[in-house]
Amino acid sequence: MHVSAPSDIDLASLVSARDGGRSMDVHCPFDKSLIGSLPVSTRDDVAAAFATARSAQAEWVRTPMRERTRILTRFRDLVLDHNTELLTWIQQETGKSRANAFEEVTDVALWAGHLAHHGPGVLRERRRAGAIPVLTRTHERRVPYGVVGIITPWNYPFTLPVTDSLPALLAGNAVVLKPDDKTPHTALRALSLLLEAGLPPGLLQIVLGDGSTIGEEIVEHADHMVFTGSTATGRTIATRCAERLIGVAAELGGKNPMLVLEDADTDRAAAGAVTACFSNSGQLCISVERIYVHDSQWDAFTSRFVEHVQTMTVRAGCTWDADMGSLISAQQLETVTRHVDDAVQKGARVLAGGRARPDLGPYVFEPTVLTDVQPDMELHSAETFGPVVSLYRAHSDEEAVAAANDTDFGLNASVWSKRHGPRVARRLHAGSVNINEGYAATWASHDAPMGGVKDSGIGRRHGMDGILGYTQAQTIAQQRLLPIAGPRGLSHERWASLMHAGVRVLSRLP
Ligand code: NAD
Image (tube, rainbow, N blue to C red; front, side, top):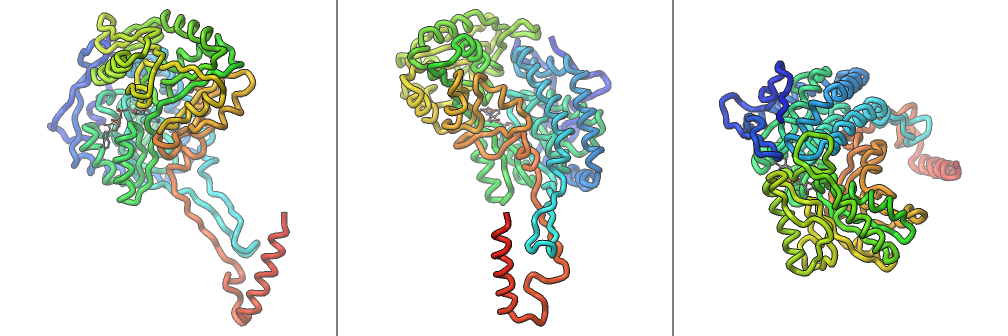
């Protein structure tokens, strides 16, 4: 089942780690087989990676923008050329279905193309209105931070490391990246393709190892941090960034609601809910875990949705025919099983699924639909991050909106309605809201920002924010003819009255 990189590429050699140190084994969730063994970085290796990245960045920041975009375009083409190999790397490290792996590869190709096309315009130096018209010539520059630390989780091992690294690099930074221990080969293969596309060696460093040692060490050296993962880890990292007075963007967890309003197209909503809830076995930060269904839709929606779920093809393997694959690990299986068992024990009803399926794979859990879920059940408010969704009846739009907003999280939301989608979307407390889609419409709108409110994070990826976020603004203002404090020889009083007259004139201009 396993793929390996083309024989001329040694992925282990791309890890920033000293020879002869510790190594770690990476296993495939489909069957627990060994994919490969990779070196583990030490804290010293992280420090060395930052030193190398820093010297590469000093050169890179002088590289013309058109050369940087050329590398992105070549990378995009290489990703498309190697898509079959990449799909298998992603699948064998995560256990997801091939269709879900395809989303990652396509997303990276589109984002690289978007950045190459639009990035330079977003990053270019801009003329700004000066303090005194004509006399003050003011420009805003966007300056890279230096070396950005990026830490990513295992659930989207190609999309997340690449989505964050590309704009950082385009803006003139170097990157030290720590992918999750469960999915390092996919990130290393992305690095090898970037090098093949022309990225200067040393500019993107990959370190591997335990989050609480290697991850913490990254935060100690970074000029800016970008983190994706759990809210608990995000809080720890943000606290340390605050102490170091460096910026941090954190994309964290969610408990995302979907609302099926009175006028929704029931068939579309029921089919859409399958993708919204069970992509990557629900191990997707923006996937739906709660559905509020209007009374008038309840019977039809519930029966159609359950019917779809019961006919899903669940399979652990690299063929295209699976609707859903495996969870990634024993730990994920344990959390999902615990949440479902706790809910059922306290009175929740299982409408579909509800069980682990060791006959299909060691970590496979059925796509599961629950109802009668109450606040004392763990999965009512906590993120399950698995293929489990709870259905709730709503008697009005008001009630659905209030329930949807009654959470500490605010990452993504989904509204299904023929007429009222935009109105209801504006009342939801979430960084992204999809109308008649689960999550893909906002995520794939690369020109628009994506991120969370409340405990779901700070900062945005995608859009202008997701590019400018890797830079600091520098303002350069050149004063001509007269100093701002007034010409020599003119009394302070006279200058003050001239200035006030000028302010009056300026305030009347359109
Ligand atoms: P996690 O926080 O345990 O780990 C994420 C990454 O952080 C890993 O690389 C890990 O090694 C590292 N890490 C762990 N402890 C660290 C520390 N003390 N210092 C520095 N780095 C550390 O998260 P997880 O459980 O692996 O991932 C799942 C979570 O990620 C879910 O909550 C999910 O919602 C969230 N997520 C969010 C987004 C988003 O864009 N909002 C995307 C994907 C996943």
